[in-house]
Length: 217
Image (cartoon, rainbow, N blue to C red; front, side, top):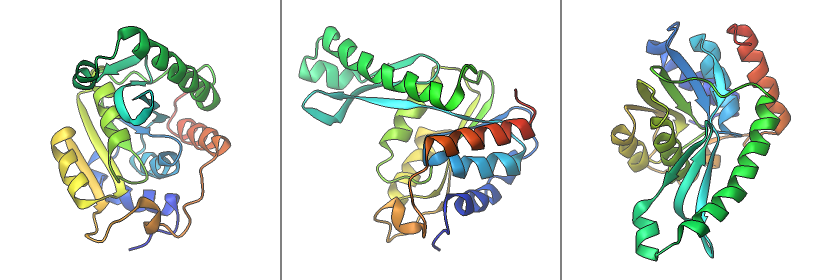
C-alpha cells in the first residue's frame, strides 16, 4: 500500500499502536524532519506529548558514512569504541568533529524548540518515530543515545521499512512496529505519493499544535 503522505502514514501507524493510547507514561519522539508529521498523527491518536529527538552522526573524516559515534538531544554522546580503536582515532579528532555536529544540533534544537527544554524521558515509555527504515543507522544511533537518558521502554515505530531491518529492531529496541515491511522494499520514498521535504516551519507548527492539545507548555 502506498501512503498518500506522511500524515496519512502516521494515521495508519497509529492504528498499530493503540495499546499505548491514553497512558500518562508515554512520550512520542520524532526523528526530524521527516518523522515529525508521522509522529504528530501518532501522538494525536494516543493523546501523548510530542517532541523531537535530534541525532547527529559523527563520521570519520574522509569517510563520513562510517560513524565513529553520535550525539543527541539531552547532551548525550555515544562513542563507537570499535571504530575508534581499529582506526586509531585520537580523542582530539573525535572532539573536533563532535563540536561541529553539536553546533548543528543546537541550531536545529533552537529552530524547533526555542528555549523549551528537552523532555524528561526517565522511566517513560518512549515511542521513537521516523517516516521509514532503510538502513536504520539514524534510528540505531537514536536508541543508543536514548538509552542513556533512562527510559523504561523504547518502541521503534515506522510506517514502512525493509523487512530485515524491521526484524533487527525487534532486538535493538524493546519493541518495534513497522506498519508495512514489503519484500519489494527499495527506498522509503517509493512508498509515499508525496514525499516532499518537511520544512523547519512545519516541524515547529506540528510540535506546538500537539503540545497545546496534550497540555504541554
